[in-house]
Image (cartoon, rainbow, N blue to C red):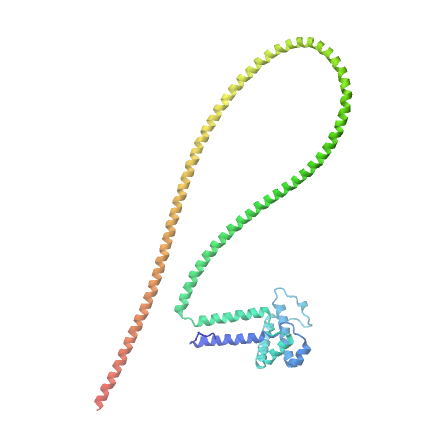
Length: 388
């Protein structure tokens, strides 16, 4: 038992004795190899055939129990000519075998030392068994604390635990909400950064392609320009001679066409006057239609201004409602806090009143006891005097 905890109740002492004995047995059994035994010849030489037979039976029962207790066990995986027993029978046999092994190890502690020598380790305990032992020891310590704690201390600890649990739950909810918001914000930020990085990478690739294409185009253009200049120079010289001949012909034709153009100019001037009158008519019609459209726009603008004013009024009204709602919620929160404070005060007063009542009853009981004792002594003294 842990130091500092004294148990006065017989049942509590019995419970702790059972737990202590169970813990000792588990520590002894933890040194027994699980499921598969080491070299059997070496075990037979070190431990003897009787001990080896008991451990072999324990190992076989553990293997069968593991197969039977699996959710969907495969009996063909068990290397034996006999069929697997049912779960209840196997459970009873394994319990009995475990008690036998435990009793054998307790009566002969040298078995554990030899198993340690064979395994080559100081403490051949599996991680699962070590964790189970730690959990069982912690459970034993908590049981001792529970059994050695008074009702008042237990109630005080329970109230304190409930208060701490409520605070922790509230803090956990706040933390989960903040973590959720941070996660969403982080995901959105990462998405934006990823999109921007992809855009930047794409633009860089396009810029690189444009640079490469531009250099190639410039080189090809310079070569084409040079060849074109040579061809143009040769063609220009030949065309110049042909154009001079053609100029002479065109000059003669120009003089002829001037006379023809004077006649066509007169015809076109008349046609121009006619078209100008038509254009003025179209302009007048256009101005009229524009005025009508402007009136329609003015009417629509007036409707828009009225609807905008109504929207502003509704937004102001909604904001006022939100302010009033926040104020009402603040008042309700304040009332809830005041109610919690009053309830806490009432609980404290109730506890103090209970304590005073207990003290008062104890005082009255002691006073009555003293009166009874005083009365008894007086009676005995009087009787003695009478005998004299």
